[in-house]
Length: 459
Image (cartoon, rainbow, N blue to C red):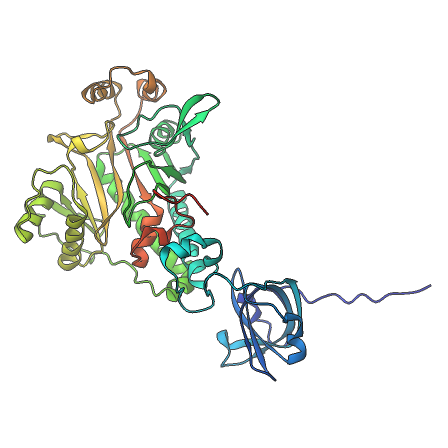
């Protein structure tokens, strides 16, 4: 009777765990991130989905990598040793290298340097490779962290997550352009937002949120617009007015940032993120006495006409009477909030009703203006929200005012209000724009995994 001895391979560990195994043999799997061939001693930096780790190779140990370049997939088995001069303070010695997938063609640009040296278009054209750069995965880990913080904050407040259809029968929510698609021989549209559905769900769960894609067929070609983005939507009932919505939004923003600080400190440090500032607790807005401004949870707010008056008095540019704020005026207001109250955030409330969708609740004191708001983050619009109409008769009247006489397309939506809805409101945060402003990027495409814009449909 013969016996056979089976020698098991060391366990695979991640690069971010290997430093805890000093003196032990471990197995790392990943990609060749950098290879420095010096002679008697050679250095291989291996990258996996969790970080980087250095292996020191003799010429014999290096031999299996002959002809391989960065990006080759390898398995490296070795002993973890402490080395103060090594990246991360540890490295592998006494190594055995096995090539899993050999790559012999250099990438379109180097991804093993501190920064990617490629134009934006070149990077986006080869995003499937460029996203392997350590700064890129740090960036998109923060993106995941924003979504996780959003979910955690709202779940703790009794909200239920929902997922609503992205193919809809009617392009009825607002004036934004929509993408039309063929749905088994009849027209359908990609959803501009989950607005109708999340209002419907308030009548079921009272407090709901959604994380999902939305589509806007607007022919923008700017640094802050894309045609498909991730929207972080919230809707909840039994509110007094839009200030209740603003209070919740402030708590959500702070919850997201607290989650990032607690769970993504390494990524924040790697990307040198300057965390946003809020107004000091107890700070008073200079507009409070006039009733045209104030504070909501350490975020200042300013009434829309008062914001236009501020801009006019400071710059001489007369935007008074305009239905919206130009990007330059948003930037000015962002600077005003930072310089006056130390806040990187500013609510602008009470936009004209003519600029807001038909479901927006008017200001009872002045029905030309709305119970709605935008939240500016470092001078760029980040969030739109407000109080919604909740009575059936008000919807019929509002649709008529917007020139809608055929209510067939709204039948299911209006049924929600016919059978009882509480006063409610909500908001939507653009994930990519949040990330762009948080990191100080100059183009939203840099904060988007695979951007879809006026010209780009691949990769």
